[in-house]
Image 1: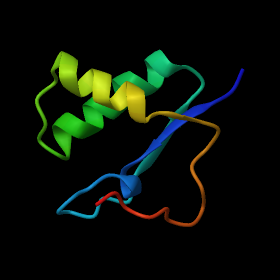
Image 2 (image 1 turned 60 degrees about the vertical axis):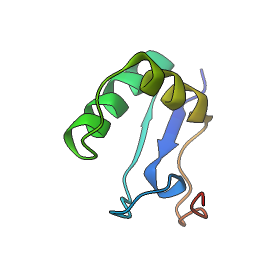
Image 3 (image 1 turned 120 degrees about the vertical axis):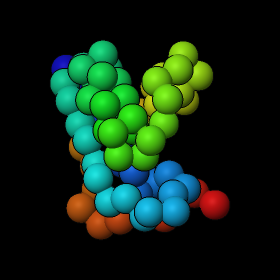
Image 4 (image 1 turned 90 degrees about the horizontal axis):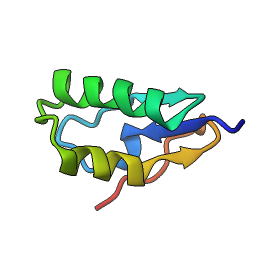
Length: 71
């Protein structure tokens, strides 16, 4: 089983969030990322947000060095 991750450092953000999250399953990662997005970034939990997050997930673990931010 391959871990999945998502890295806020890759997302456009006014707060320059440096959190990276990973989990063994896509479902587990989606739930924790939704919690983070709602609590920290003040997003509303919507089907569109869930689709965007699922599409941004990558296999493996977050890199140690910060990736380039999306423009």
